[in-house]
Every structure is written in structure tokens, then in C-alpha cells.
Image 1 (cartoon, one colour):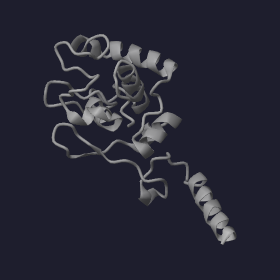
Image 2 (cartoon, helix red, strand yellow):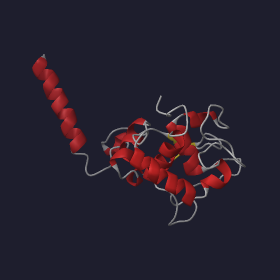
Image 3 (cartoon, one colour):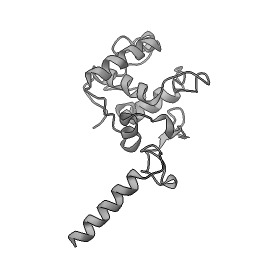
Amino acid sequence: MRSLLLTTLLAAMLAACNNGGQSAGASAEGGGVKAIQFVTTQDGQPMEIDHKMFDTPAAKEFLATGKNPYIGNEEAIKEGKKKFNLFSCVACHGGHGEGAVGPGLIGENFRYAKNATNKGMFETIWHGTNGGMGAKGFGLMAPDDGLKPDDVLKIIAFIRSHAKITGNE
């Protein structure tokens, strides 16, 4: 019995390592780990994001689990703050995501309830809202501009550093 368990575990590990160079979040058809499914904040329709864009270990982990590994990481929070300012998020959402012209992002009453999770906040930042916020995801603002998944995760880590929730609950 123990031998069968070890053999099965070894086979699973080999399959994960030998996935043809695809990202950890590749779909089941590609032979990799099944990825979380993204939906738009506007209408809940499926949203496709090229899995190759999830090109860092943190982004790959997020794609596989929906959990943001940058939560609580001081270096990522600093980088997220820079991006939050660079993309003018501060103009609408305030210096710490507390809200200004636009809604607060630190909870507990989110304009979009899904933003209580990091997956939901990622979807909102990536594809925008009906309420006036444009898409920030790479290639959506302009063909060669926008935030990459890793950038969005760092921005979320910055926002969560001022919140009572982590979004990974």
C-alpha cells in the first residue's frame, strides 16, 4: 500500500515538473495544474487572461489558488504603493485606498462585494468596472501598456496593508 502511494506521488510530481514549459496555472488541456477562473466585475462574464503573463512564482501561485502570496511582504507592499501612485489610483481611491472620489478599497463595505477576496479585487483592477474605472490589465488600456498580473498582486498587497482583511481568508 505504501509503495503504491509513493509511486502515485512520484508520478504526480514528475507530471508537474514535466509540463512542457507551461506556467503553473496552465489549463487541464495543456497538462498542467487547473487554474482559477476569472470573471469580469461588470457582468460576471468569463474573462480570459493569457496564462503566460503569470510569469513569476507569486503570480503562478495566485493563478493556481487565488491566494496572494505578497500579502504582508514589505518589499512587495512598497512596490505596490509605487504602482498605485504611478497608475493614478490614489487620485480616486485616496493615498491608502480609503476612498476619495472613488470608493474605498480597504473594506469592510466594498462597492463590489467580490473585492473582499484577492481574486475579486484582481478581476476588478484588471478589467475595470461599470462605475467609471477603466481596465488596468496589460493590453487592455493600450496594446503595449498596463499592469501585469504580478503588479496587480503587489498593488493589492499595498491596499491590504491598510485593511483589516487580507483577502486570502
